[in-house]
Amino acid sequence: MADLSNYFCPSPKCPDYEIREKGNITTSTRYGKNKTLLLRCRTCNHRFSENHGTIFMHSNYSKQEINRIILAIAESNSILGTARILSFDKDAVNRIVLKAGEHCKKILGDLIRDLYLNECQLDELWTFVKKRNLFPTKTSKKNTDDIGSGGRSIRNRS
Image 1 (cartoon, rainbow, N blue to C red):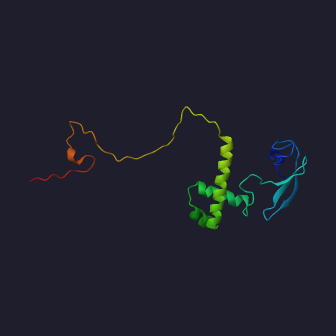
Image 2: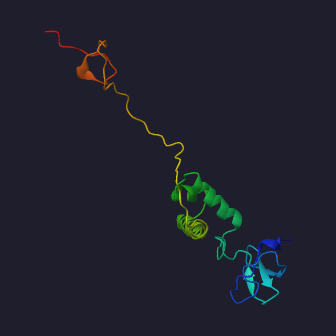
Image 3: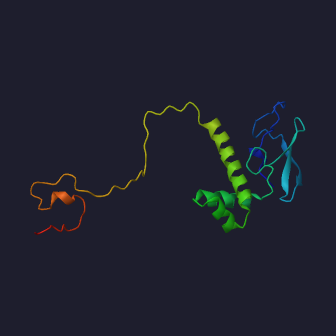
């Protein structure tokens, strides 16, 4: 049995709209090939899917398949590579990734507001610069014409 305490009525007309753990949500039936749970609000009799408001809503794929696709993309795999590895159509993978991105944009847009930062810490920002001796010392016996070559200089001994 699903934990119904996390669900709330999504109908704005309901007096219990967006109120969790009220005890007004009950199971109605299951539907679809993935046997998705249909929930019902006891207050207003509004019925809605357990996937309401998630990336799993209106999807032909199971939660496990969508999770595998998102995890593969999160590991820096390409759309085409993910489709080949998981045996999906590349267009289906692309649709799922775009839907997940829009969902994340919506959720983060609601959660992260009026964020005023005084400091910012950038961790693990790496860059590589070719090692060069730009400032040779006076005691250096290297030829200054071939700065940064790292190899032996061959002088013309004429």
